[in-house]
Amino acid sequence: MTTAHVLVVEDEPKIAALLSDYLHRDHYAVSLLDSGRPVMDRVRADPPNLILLDIMLPDMDGMRLCREIRQISAVPIIMLTARIEEADRLRGFELGADDYVCKPFSPREVMARVRALLRRAGQEPIPPSMHTQDALGLHLEPACHRAMFNGLELTLTPVEFRLLQQFHDQPNTVLSRENLLDGLYDDHRVVTARTVDSHIKNLRRKLQAAVPGHRLIQAVYGVGYCFKPPQTG
Ligand code: CA
Image (tube, rainbow, N blue to C red; front, top):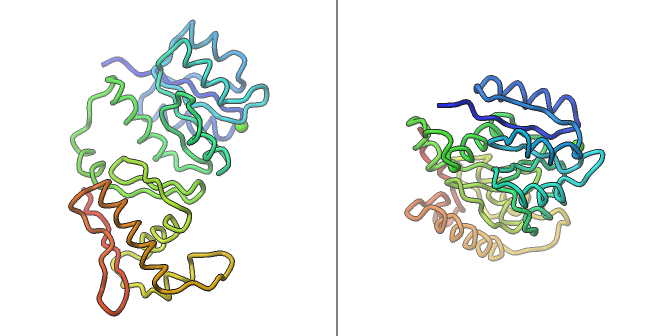
């Protein structure tokens, strides 16, 4: 198997160095660019197998650059975003990006995405140990209100995300509706237990749709709800 070549476009030296370290550790060939202008020429001259592309570059908008790259190459692109507003824009735009991660990110998470994308692009075999973990992982990114379950992104409302986060933070614990209400809204609005029930109902429906047959949130009669984390490994 040949070594995959990853191009990192990132102007923050610390982040570029961190990504470069982790990529080298995983035996990728890495090239770094700290601005947007040289990217198109580089992609033409030395086509990478994957690009990690920062959105806020000193000389260019990373989103525009992503669109330009797409016109000449189908290379997998992961966008690096620093703000929830950017993540929202990313979700809304047809940029041609394959994935995105929010800063501050866990380098391990980024590496997992890199592997997954290269695998999908047919560049890497699937290590057998990753199957089960991939299959039932629940991963939350509070910085951009992003929830991944079973490798699929869940489309959650802000309230549903907060609910899921509360469950996720306190697994195997029965939480009353009052417990859950406390963390639900910033503005101390008056809501009833029924409101919680209806949000949970929607959340459960979305989780069920992602992985049929798994009841992550279980109702405990007369008490509240309990989160049973997915079995991994
Ligand atoms: Ca930047």
